[in-house]
Image (cartoon, rainbow, N blue to C red):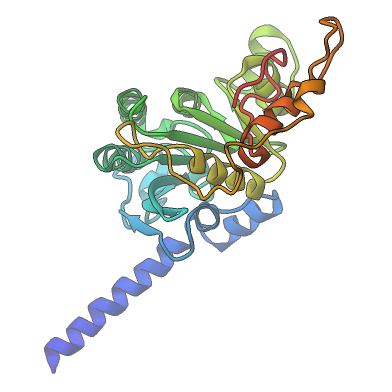
Length: 316
């Protein structure tokens, strides 16, 4: 009887810890995230993965820092939610930075969680998707935090060409947080809330005297049109997640597999007589190459990459 009571108490304690972990930085910060028009890390994962497939890893991990008041700022999960699930029925690994916990800053513990899912995705030959919303390194931890970035970058390079690596910029991606997405295969940015820059507008103004906004410095538009870092631009978080799910329909899970086969009712013998007239005989007469591509590919299903960058060429 006493053993059963103890087991029940342990189970209750575990469930209580789980409830605390689900709240991240607390309800007040969750409400603040929503007021900014942003979803939480867990809400984003729920939208990305097939319903009911997410299995979280290391949800009770906390940082070990004690300096600068961090000993009183411990949250289960420590600023990143990691795990795996299914996208379109296929296994995928995911990590989502939690801005409600210390601005999503990268601690030593958070870096270890991210590198763990990176390594698991490589071992299992499955895509990995990073949902980025971070102010960068947790400077209170000094070199321990910065060392975490080196491990993440190392895994980015090892995974390159082996598994699909996708980043969705859903908030600030500042300082060290910028390099890892730039090393991944595809970068999605959400207009209005996603920014990528090495250093912010205040430092730029102090060093160069130039005044720029967050959007002008590192928003979706400059990265999609000028730097080429962003491959896709989305109007909303839901739109970006829908785009990622669609992209993965075209890609194999790893470099040893073929791309997924989809049912196709578009016969290979199909003839499109309008193709003969779309391309004009006069080489100086303009035409829309997308009209040609949509008529050539199956069911007009063409996903364009880098739509706003180097507009003189179409890839997809």
